[in-house]
Every structure is written in C-alpha cells, then in structure tokens.
Amino acid sequence: MLWGFFKKLVIADKCAMVVNTNWSDYQQLPAVTLVILAVLFSFQIYCDFSGYSDIAIGCARLFGFDLKQNFNLPYFSRCIPEFWRRWHISLTTWFRDYIYFPLGGSRCSKAKIIRNVFIVWAVSGLWHGANWTFVCWGLFHATLLAIYNILGINTKYKDVVTLNVKSILQMTLTFVLAVIGWVIFRAESMSQVCDYFSCIFHNKLIDMSLIKGKLALILCCLLVVTEFLQRTKVHALQFPDNKLFDKRFVRWGVENHINDIEILFLGNSHIEEAVKPELVGKNAFNMAISGRGVVYDVEIAKRYIPQMQNLKAVFMPLDYPKFNLGRGQKNANEKRTAERDWNRIYKCMYYKYMGIRVDEFYYWSEIYNSSLDYMMRFVKTEEQKRECDSLGYIALDVTKRNANWAYRNMPPVIDVNKPVDTEKFNELKSWYTTLAELTKNRNAQLILLGTPMYETYQKDLNPKVLEEILSFVETLKKDFPNVEYYDYTFDKDFLPDDFNDASHLTDSGADKFSRKLKEVMKN
Image 1 (cartoon, helix red, strand yellow):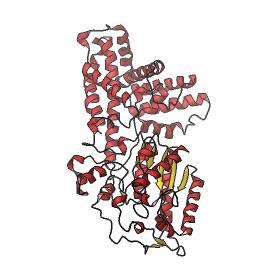
Image 2 (cartoon, helix red, strand yellow):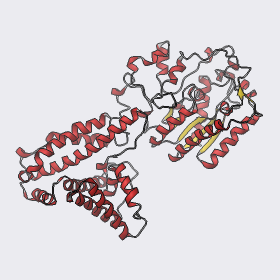
Image 3 (cartoon, rainbow, N blue to C red):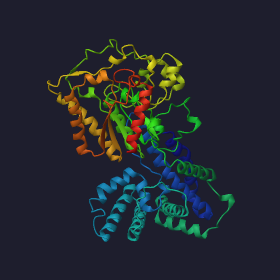
Image 4 (cartoon, rainbow, N blue to C red):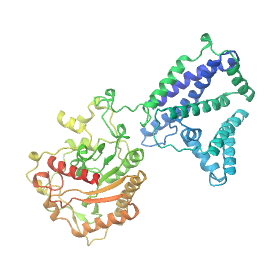
C-alpha cells in the first residue's frame, strides 16, 4: 500500500501537474522539453494505474484476500508483446479471453491473427473513450503487434531482466514506442499529435530556461532505479535484509522471505519441535505451529504457495491421529491428566500467524507490534519471549522432560470395527488434495511424513490404521505424482534420549530427523 501511495501521490500527481500545466503550450517549448513532457506523461499514467492497483492489493491483504499482480514492471519490457503482458494485466487478460480468443486467437492463419489483433485494439481504443485519438492509439499498438508477429518477435521471457547491451537496447526501443503511443493517447486530436511530433523535430532543441519538470523527472528516475533493484521482490519496499526492518520493529515472517523459500514446512508440533530448517537445506522455512489443525495449513498454503517462485518441496506430517475419523477414544496409557498450559511458550507459537480467517479464527502472517510486547501476554519470561519470537523450530530439552515422558502424548485408541465418519474422511482428503494441487502447480514436491515415535507409542498403533494411511497416500499419488511419503514412525535410529515424550523429539532427536530430511531433499 505504501509503495502504491508513493507512486500515486508523489510521482503521478507531480507528473500530472507538470504535464497539464505545459501541454497546451507545446508549440512554444523546445524539443527536449516536449520529450520530457511525453516521458512524464508515460510515468504519470503508469504510476496512476499501478499505484491504485498496489493500494487495492494491500487493502485486500488486510482482509485476508490475495489479488493478482496487475502491473509487472512494464517499462522493463524487451518488446511490445511483452509490454502488454505486463501492463494492466487484468484488463488485457479480459480483452484476450472475451474478444481475442472468441475471434480465433492465434490458432488460425497469419492474416486472421493480424485481423483479430486489429479488432481487439480498435475495441480497446473505443473502450478508453469516444475520441479518434484513442482509436488511433489502439491501432498504433495493433500495428506494432502485427509487425512483431510477422517478424516472429514474440518472446515470452521467463528470466529476470539484466543489464546488458542487448536488453538495454530492447528496453529502450520498447519504451520509446510506448511513449509515442502515450502521446497519441494524451493528445486532444490527431492534428495535435502530428503537430506535437513536428515541433519535436522543428522547434529549438534546448532552452534551459524552458526545461520543465526537472523534479518530476528525478522522481521518475528514482522509481526506475528502485523498481529495477527490487525487480525480483513482491513489491519495491520489500527489504528483508535491511536493518531498518530489524526484529525490533518487524518480526521476520513468511512475507519477507516469499521469494527465498525453497523448502517449506507445515504442520503441528511434530514438525515445529522436530525440524531445524537450517540443517535441512538452503532457504528452508519452518511454519509449523503447536496445536494447529490441517485446515489452517491449507489456508496458509493457499495464500502463500502460489507466490513462492523458487519452491522445491513442502513437508507436511500425515499423523496417525488424523485417521481417528470418528472411531477413537482416549488412550488409557496416557499419563498427562491436565490440559496443556497455554500460558507457556506453545501458546505464543499458536498465535504467531494470525490474519487468515478460518471459521471464527484468524491468522495473520506477521506481527508488527513486537515493540508493544505482544508476546509477553502469553509467556512468563524474556527468554521464552525471545524463543517464541523466532520462526519455526522450538527446542525441547531432554533434562526437563516429565517423569512419565514415555506415556505422554500417546495415540488415540482407534476401533477399526466402527464405521469411518465419511464427512471427516472427505474433509481430510480435500485438505491433502488441495496441498498436493498447490505444490503441483508450482512444480514442487509434497512430501508427507510419518514422524518418529517412541516405542510406547508404537505399541499402541493399530496395524489396520497404518494400512489405511498407506492406502490414502497411494490414492493421492495416483492423481498427483509429485506426492511422496516417508515413514519414520518405527525408525530404529532414534534413541530414548531423542524423545521428549512418546511422540515429540528432543533437540538431539530433532537434529537427527532434520539430517534425514536433508537426505530426502538430496534424493
């Protein structure tokens, strides 16, 4: 939102003031000033529309909605077709889907393709206003697109633009052509367009006393430099490594790392207290939270995974208790009689990612009020606060585990003779299907895990339920080849000191488990 307001209020409005004041006097202005006015109008219209779009995207995120990017740095385009794939994406997509495609799109002869392009752009010009300048602006771009099509220049660039001689020349040519189009768009009549360009070539080249818009031009240059340097980020003000955005002011969160994340961990305490992301691989990120249900993981995945450009794998537990499905009851061997003390550090972990609405609950991905001691509402000591305010892994000390640790957090007793609750099963299937589809769309793996369990936990597992888990995974893999399953439930490498209770690992156990997952990533 802040970047959107900057573009609209600081750059667009400043450019508009200069352009509107001097446009009517263009015949008396030197050529350099006319070129500057044309450039300033180009940035005015860009910052107006893209600024509004950024503000709308930011406002939507406050309410938990993700709107698609509408302007993708169009002035860094290397050809006109690319420019229109980056400019006002929602509008150009509408014209493509509802006019260009019904006319036959690109699946017809070259002549008909060019015809379709001219029809679309004539309609686009009329859509902007009932003036011949708008129609001619549309036909101007239709002509350029037709030329590019005839010449076979329609590269769909997937790489990040870099500064080399070729790309600089391509961007310069594209920008010049776009500016010519914006002059047609801004003019009041086609005769004024012709006269404007005539003045550029026939008026005095430069007169320092008549140079207009110097401050606005400097601001435009600042915009270009900032957006180029931040071209790989979600927005231009994303500076995750800058001291200005240190933990004192903003707690690190997933949105600060969205373009860095290659390995994402979701789930509950079986991951949060069992995985050290730095041991698994480069740019691994642990978003697991104690006590969190799968429905929250799915909502968080829906929000963030589509934005993760470099994502390789998502790790997610497939826990035995999830297959209770209305058939379970409390384990008689369970030694913990009291409910978990949510005033301990676990509670703050549960509150770390609020903002995404699920039923009556909210998660948001970052807490911007560390300075207000938000975490101290849930913890008792500064040490717990510091640990809570870190992302991901929570270390469990073997020396502090309960005397009855081997019988705490035992599995539910599942009676397989009882019928499965169909509604709960379909819900479970829907959750994991969504995760599989999201990762597949990003060409990433969904790695499901059976996390390590102590021998007391293992003895109370029902073999038929374990078969149900395997069958569930195989069914999922038939539709989604990107799904893999690794079961460490009975792994003999984990010793008694590696367990904090029957189903959670200590720090040493987490170290072992993390290194095993690192091997999974290698394979």
